[in-house]
Image (cartoon, rainbow, N blue to C red; front, side):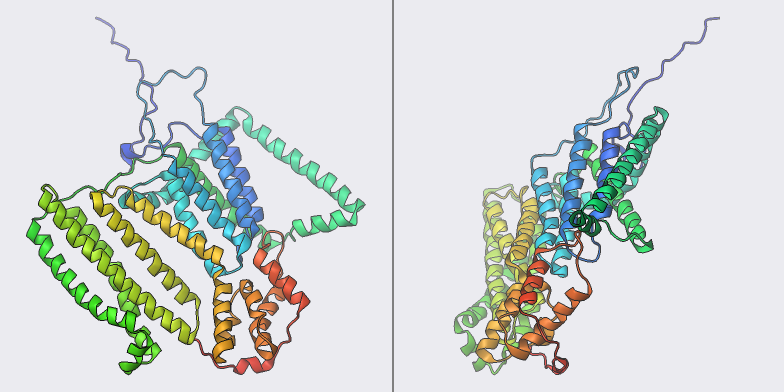
Length: 517
């Protein structure tokens, strides 16, 4: 009897049989020791630097540490052992284009806003946007569908990264690397503590620096360290996991089922006629200005409130209408392509006029009742949508829009960074103070809720108006001072100005009547 043949095992790495299948099998090997050490080190820096309760320089420090950790993890990937056989089947992860560097720079820039601006609402917007641009930097995504899928997969990447990093630590422990790493950490801490203590006892100036840098260690501080370290490890591990093996995201949404010419042209042509009728009425308003408002027997508040939000919704709904028509309308013949350009281009142009009408209403309203954060944000959104419609018109020239989704996101990021550069709280305060100088109307109760960024503008006020506007801001900064993690240029300038020109707390401010509606 012939002996049974011996079948040699086949070596991979093989794609994981998981929920994600072959589109995202993940890295074929555990994380390298350099990647693991860099991610843990960056998470430690984040835990020590990030101030959870305010914007500050610590966010920028953590962002830079995270970028360095991801660069190290990418530059020194895991390598097969010297005795490992050559794999019979390999899977090459998708490579990301140069745009990832722009998304990375945008992420760092958005997190750096907290170093210069004290407005918490502004930094929260930057933080949420930085999370999105950071995902695009490590996962990619060109189409709207691809970017949406990248955001959905990001939490799963953080979960899969924990096993990826754990396998790396296990491998180092088997080779003795983990003990050497622990010994290195212990020796480093011991040297810093011993020599730092000696230098602090030898010089009073150095002791003050050490006191300002080292926080008071208590239960709350330790809890915050553990929480931030866990979140940073989850986020950075997921980013490194995605960067090592990005998922195979769809690059286009597909064409879908085409409809006939009449099926899409008739509804949109009727919509164009409706838009044209409304725009004809609005042109009278745009050129009539205040005279039209008064002739209609309306107040500024009634005029602005009666239609602004409806026009904003109209603008937002027009975008999916244009996207659906561009996707499903036929374009095989020259007549089809001319019709698409004519109908969709006209609809986009009319929508731009409607946006101008909405901005005109908001401008009248702000001139009458003052500027607020909500009004600034809404105006910025309208301007962003206007640029988007201009991009849509540009894409309609050649009926190709593969570049459009990423450009729309990039324009939104630039708009937010531009808002941060404009210093919105100071802009609001300047506008309202100028209005007060002209009309004598001032809502000090609202202005006192602005961030310290507004202090230089509010300093233009005199007497009790200045005290009422600046008193709560000064009190808040005195009660809750910054450490090095929360250092912020806006608060630093505000403290310096208020130290030179202190305010007097006025009880009469409690009875001030708001004029900002």
